Image 1: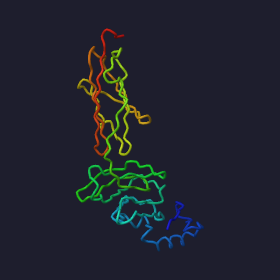
Image 2: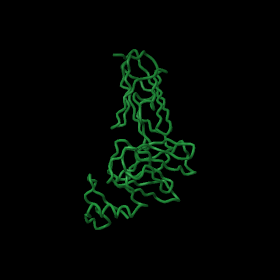
Image 3: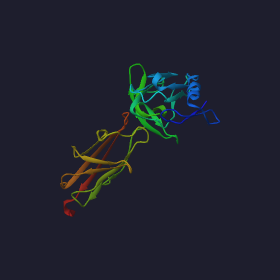
Image 4: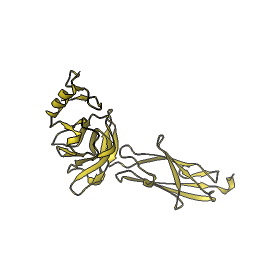
Amino acid sequence: MMFRLQLNEPLREFAYGNDFQPLPALLAQERLRQQKYYLHAWNENTEIEIDGFRINLPETKPGNNIFFKMETSGSSDPTEAAIMPDDRIMFDGMEIKAPIPPEYPADKTALYGISRKGKPSFAGNDPDTAGFVSANVKSFGTYRIMVDSVPPEIDNIRPWNNSTIKTSRPSIRFYMDDELSGFNSDTLLTVTLNGEYQICEYDYENNIVYVHLTENLAPGRHELVITARDRVGNTTTRKSGFTYSASSKN
């Protein structure tokens, strides 16, 4: 049974069932409490478990009139849970913990928030020795256990491989993207030029990495090595070489 809740403080009305008719506050609370298996009062629960999927609520209580619903896809395949209403934001966050299916590799398994359009976004991948993966999230919604075994994509490296350039301070850039886990910091990307680490800037909107040279290049051959690692450890390494010709320097 689905429900819709108007989050007023104090609770003034509650739309119940399919007719969505407002109910007096006392009657609304009574009908909610009769549905204990499906509906939970925040002030009465700090840890909920359904079909192996667990949530731990923060110690700080937002109020006595906040109710929420948790449901999973079923005990035979507990890979998804919905915590509703999905527009509730928690500044203190809450912990979600889910059992890793036996066929899932733990090091590649993570929890992902699923948008209303079905698009996943990385939430966390903290596995434990008991076979659970957990994440700390800031909002209610739908969360799913997923495996990411696809390494990041690196392409369109400039200057082109085996090309000859005419400037001692070329624009070095390349395309980098990861469809599922993504990247969380520049520490997951290393770029070396002739064995020396380079300063990079990642344009998240266009998925382009810019390499900022601090010195002019010497004439001759130069080797670029790019290594990108996503949040679950999938790694891609690409190499590219180009030549700066002293005879055509500016």
